[in-house]
Length: 288
Image (cartoon, rainbow, N blue to C red):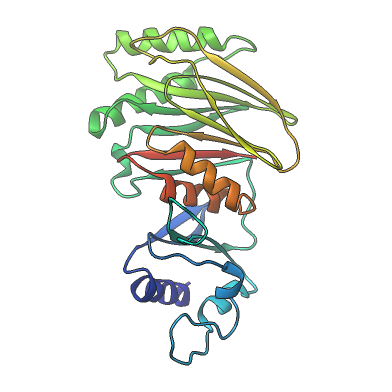
């Protein structure tokens, strides 16, 4: 990990004109991500070969090769260059332990620092996962999110009663003078997903050969609230469900998924957040 920090940090300075190193806990394991908006790489397979260097000087080329060939760590790379993208340039390198436990979903949120004042959230109760975005920023948004999360855990959610749940949440927000929220409730079953939501949350569905974008009903829980949209999807091989707050450019996110859909969901979440993030608060959740 120390070597990776040195190597990826040096690459940021030499080739990307700067960027960021993120230290992340993924399933309680320390992971490292390097993100930048530099020139990118045309061919990822080439840059990880032994002896490769983009400089004119002779190089041993042990840096990325040593990381990608390590027995205990996995290095995943997503890179857009001017040659292979019209709207995105830059790179993401993610290093994590190979024995990382797999879960059915993951989430990535920015800002990484001062995250206690981020109004976005993702929480799970049994087979239900609630993905939400509270209006505004700062402490008020965080406190409202905390109360909405508490309400979620204290509420009973029965089969087919999702409209009723959102109506109860609507009343709860008004009665307690909380910030309004847009969100999606995902019922995770072995063979299928049910998704219920309202407001400006993007839903992308990645299948084997394409990635489609779907919209939820307009409205804001706690202010203007009409009805809940519903989607039911039977899981297929290589299928992925992606939820994004309005801090993510959904069209750019789909471009990332279509090009790098073979990455782990954790690396893909980081790549989407980095390449497609547009606002102060940006959160994405991936389900497999």
